[in-house]
Image (tube, rainbow, N blue to C red):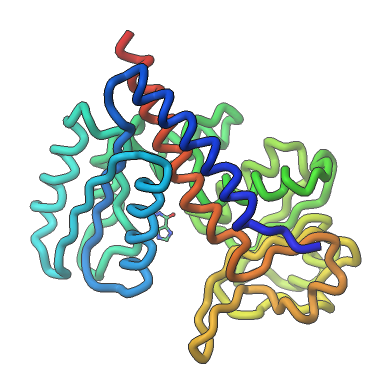
Length: 283
Ligand code: GUN
């Protein structure tokens, strides 16, 4: 069966829009997300545009800061610091990757934990690792929502995550562990990868290689979640070879229309939660 991320996402956005409306009625302001982009990467520009449009769709305020590649790092740092101190701003997002020459971890470190709607800060990642999460990285959180939508009980299942990035693979593994799965993280240096993937009841693929996972690598009846977005000969495809894997999977996400739409929805959710938490902390 296909997992329709677009539909799950639309249902969640409608609920978020209701809560945004409640927030505005009681607080007299809208939740606000500030997005910073540096450089001209076309994919990043599209993502940022979709984030800004997503805010409008659920009734949130957004601010966008666009800098050319070559903008002095101090100017970007000054913007982040001023947004950090702006009481009307709930979330700050620096679109990654930054162009070469910028110190990504320094700039991200200027975002206070309470406004880190990407869930990338050491505190937010650490809290997730300790089973007491606050803000969780958007893509893995979206995957958990898609898994919940299948109705399958995750407890005790063998979950295999392909990829170990700080933004997807690691938080994904921790979320699955917190959901009582038995979790294995595989990556580009894993020896005998197929032996692991063939044991997976749940296979989450975020390895960044087009059509990398093929049918022979997947267990009959597995749930397969494809986080990849690749452009091959002008067409979008995932990290999973859909045609050979789909007949074996009990559930599978398509690309596009699977995980992709969930990521921005989770960003909107994280921004709403940040706004609510910040207001509660003032009391
Ligand atoms: N670039 C690709 N995905 C993301 C994301 O989730 N957050 C940020 N900040 N940059 C990204």
